[in-house]
Image 1 (cartoon, rainbow over the protein chains, first blue to last red):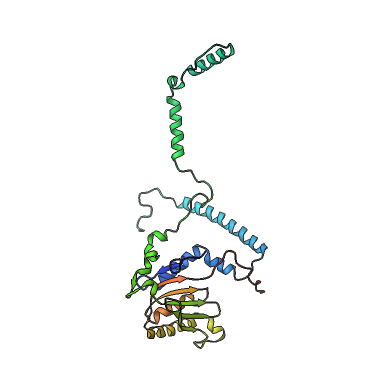
Image 2: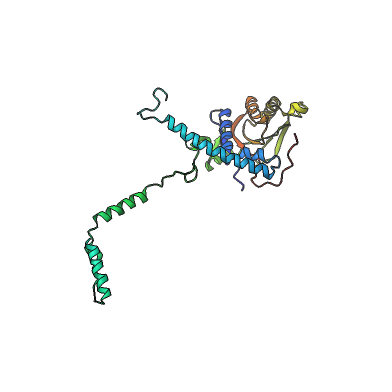
Length: 87
Length: 202
């Protein structure tokens, strides 16, 4: 699917701050897994490698989800301002 | 109890073939408790479903970036917006083609006709030195000087590929005195590509 040039995957530079714009662009590309897919398709990935990678990603996602829940549980706060002095 | 009695009576009457008129249920219902149950059911139905499954199964995580930093992302109105007296879609374009071994920078006008082209190899970096961030930066500085000679000071940047020169080439353009309006990623990525070459043997 083709996208409109200079609208898709585009970040405008604000106040001549190129670095921040680059960071934003890389963040979007990383989050959408475009960079990962680019790196993956440089060389042929054999089916056994695909299976291994997908299984690993599944396990990692499950682990990360549960770990995040645990961290949220430990860090939960019951006061009006959850983190006094940090804002 | 009352309803049960009526139903029993009707059943009995049917068994002995008596003509019976079924009482209108709405008239006899003393349905306070049943309505309460219905209300509860309605309330539960109107509540959002409790998601106890995997994150992302029922809800979608949207990056908060798009709301907080919306001015960073262009919309359709950008095409006619003026930058340094020129509409956005008539600004010259600087294409940066990055690979692991080289960086090629070309400057085209808004129609895509190339005017300038420089690469790290042309710049005098040879062999492995071509594929370094320093070479990319030097190339970008020299091409930006040439672009300013042409009178192109405000440009859009299009980056293609991944490599060590990706960031430093953009930085070099800015150091060379060009005013960068936008940065676009133009890396060709396919989710069903033709079969790539075989893995490198290590």
